[in-house]
Image (cartoon, rainbow, N blue to C red):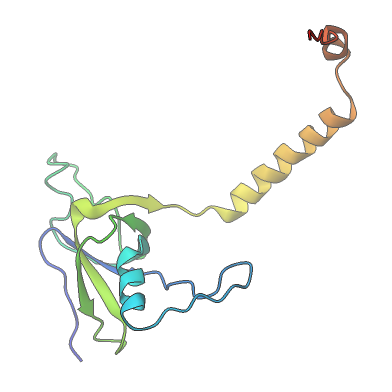
Length: 146
């Protein structure tokens, strides 16, 4: 079975699947060329392979390292790159991008974010229950003029 090996400053991305049902349950009809257009407008995906000199031109120092690695979830430029048939999954397509078209790496820290949100919510609830006396004293009546 053929395998794609990215060369030079290119990056191979597997685009995220198109949502065909919204979170509210609305079905979005995506067929034919509409699906192709929607896939072309997709802006996130997973890095499958990285070329040997990707991002080297942007960081020419001796301690150069790629900005994204295989397995990272990234945001890339809309309508960038070239679609290539996935040899492992017939009917699926990959996107071959220039290194400069990768805009950001999405870092997911779900457990840490949930813990921080819980910590932030608790003190806010306590403050809401106990209004500060200084704030109550500063309130002045609104004067209306007709």
